[in-house]
Image (cartoon, rainbow, N blue to C red):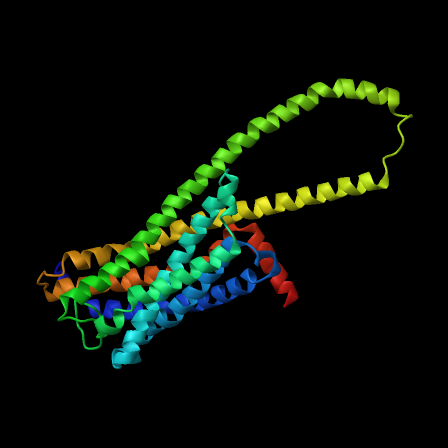
Length: 355
């Protein structure tokens, strides 16, 4: 009754690969398409943070379309990447590469929000659209350099470390196993998570500093205006009938100033909402990537261990669960934006009105 070896781990893995990807693909593809439509609208085209969000959404789409679809096919034993060496290498490369770029684009968004929220004018001026596109290109090129090793270190017929598939790391090449696992662990999961957390906390610190500086100024202005009211009112009472109406140019200037103030407040609200979306997205990434993070560290630490079939089966089940959790992060970003971002919901409603 208590014998764990009686558990059918193969059936558990097959069930996970068959049925979990279906809702993730359905909601993920729809959500990513809507993200692309919304992020390319006029209201967001010049926002650098949204440019990073758009780039991350495109990477997520590739990750779902290649990585998750092949796992779904593997659940029904019709995955062509398990029988073709070329397709196997391409699948691994695109899956790792898209996950790597998607994570780093969100990291760049955290850095951008930190720079924009700084009280230092020179620091804020460092953020430009040109530098944003250069950063994206650097991430894309570095991804090719980092994960190009997979065209050598990945192949079929590699039943390794309890992997529930033949398309995996070369089982006779320990250097490949260590390099591939460490690159994914460090570049795709751990380092982006650290960057997101550090700069996310720095953004919150900058926001608190701004609020602490604004509140005393507002209180001082309110006190000064209150003390000046009696004198102004007495003067106005004497000059009310003698003062001519203001010229039209002054009225227009006042209207323009009020309009610019409203635009500035709208931009500030948008930036504040983007910070909230970014912080929630960072938390989601850290939570969803945690199981894969643990397994990659474990796989490198126990690479020389002789493992029983039961231990390999348990590891295979954990791999299946951790991968689905990792793909969950690629599938739910649209719903995070919709639930937590009023400006995003507003643009979504506009999109449906135009459709």
